[in-house]
Amino acid sequence: MRAYLPQFELITPTALEDALKLLAREPGQWEPFAGGTDLMVLLEAGKLAHQRFLNIWRLKELHGMEETRENVTLGALTTYTEVQKHETLQREFPLLCRAAAVTGSVATQNRGTLGGNIANASPAADSPPALLVYDAELELLSARGARWVRYAQFHKGYKQMDLAPDELIARIRLPRRANVAPGFSPASWGWHEYYSKVGTRSAQAISKVCFAGAAQMANGRIADIRIALGSVAPTVVRCAKTEEFLRAEEKLTPAAVQKAQEILAGEIAPIDDFRSTARYRRRVAQNLLGEFLGSAVR
Amino acid sequence: MPDAAKVRIAFRVNGSEHIVHAWPMARLLDVLREELRLTGTKEGCGEGECGACAVLLDGALVNSCLVPALHADGASIITIEGVAQGEQLHAVQQAFLEHGGAQCGICTPGMVLAAVNLLEKCPNPTEADIRNGLAGNLCRCTGYMKIFESVVAACKQQR
Ligand SMILES: Cc1cc2nc3c(=O)[nH]c(=O)nc-3n(C[C@H](O)[C@H](O)[C@H](O)COP(=O)(O)OP(=O)(O)OC[C@H]3O[C@@H](n4cnc5c(N)ncnc54)[C@H](O)[C@@H]3O)c2cc1C
Ligand code: FES
Ligand code: FES
Image (cartoon, rainbow over all chains, first blue to last red; front, side, top):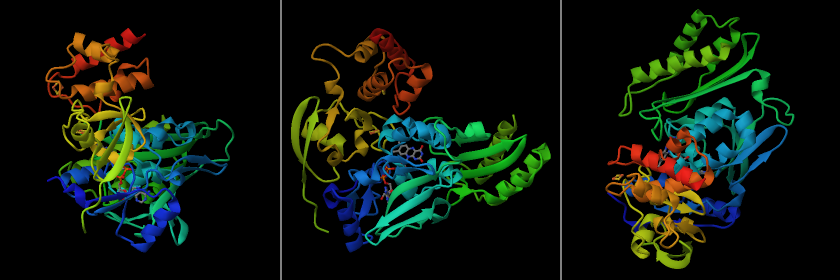
């Protein structure tokens, strides 16, 4: 049933400092509110866990993008629409743009944010596999100060995060893959990138399996490889063992691909739920790995 | 916890200024329909899936069931009531009329706004662009083809 509206607070600090002070004073009392595309659904269903919301939408420090020689850094409030429009991201981080393009529809992409997608901590979210492939780091801010954490270490278990109740996700940092000349594209350095989201319908469906992969090819051999999946474990997962095996292989023979698929199955822990079955998810994850590797050597 | 206090929200809707007082988490959808009596904006699912409640918020297509009215403070909004210029229908509306793009009409305001938004952002859309631009809008009546054809016709008309 719909929630009783008068019981909810939504306050709008105009300065980041004030927002952090409030979180510090009453930790756990205030839930950040960004684009609202996850929270408003819960409101309508009467399932919101909190009653007091801290509107961070207008905090300019959490918007915007910055480029240095080493990194591209995105504010946590960067929307999917902004991700798709950004030329450097299109060129150097195409998997993130692909993920943004298949997240919900235009209206959701205009409001949904990367920070919200991360903090909502759904194992079926679509941008985290791309962020994992790109070795993203998160800046967490509180009145106590700022700290950077590797995104690969951020999700601790189902909906459990390395995020204290007084902290906000402020920025997402993506390390660039080489010293960057203007117009540099990882593709010209042999990087091959692959993203696939499998759902009930191609638009606006929650993933049954989501796969992001990037491989740097040199003379038909894998020089570097990164693989991450969504919807196949309690959190999104980077598949280090599969990567390690593939990096050590001289050639991507059909036998090597098969072996990699077996290792992958051991690295994921899919479940049966209302969207799909464990068996289907495991099989599809393996098939997507096969497709990714096949397309990389082609 | 005692009830929250209502908040003051000032915004521009279809070109005119409004001030309303609403609960902090009131949905923009309800404020438009119940405070401003702009009932062209429809509620289908109430959870962001159907697009019946779509409006343009500072030029961006959004589902008003997922936007707290507070986020629209200071913003400029266009609802379906603001798409025509007086008696002059927008090319998209005219095309929906001529090509059978509407049946029961519940999805129509959102479909029209999604199409208007698409043509603003991308005046020469491909077939894939049109499908993508309307992917967040559900229709239970038309089977979508008439809507698709209407949007194609509106593009030609605009050129
Ligand atoms: C119709 C529809 C379709 C969708 N489709 C997809 C899809 O295909 N793929 C997908 O991955 N998701 C999808 N979503 C989910 C949602 O849009 C995304 O998760 C979105 O990125 C959430 O961002 P937000 O800013 O709207 O989050 P909010 O709803 O504002 O917040 C979500 C959670 O994150 C917390 N939070 C937000 N920002 C911060 C921050 N900076 N620091 C700390 N905590 C924060 C909030 O407290 C809350 O717990 C869909 C949603 C809808 C309604
Ligand atoms: S009522 Fe808002 S998207 Fe369906
Ligand atoms: S015309 Fe009836 S839902 Fe589309």
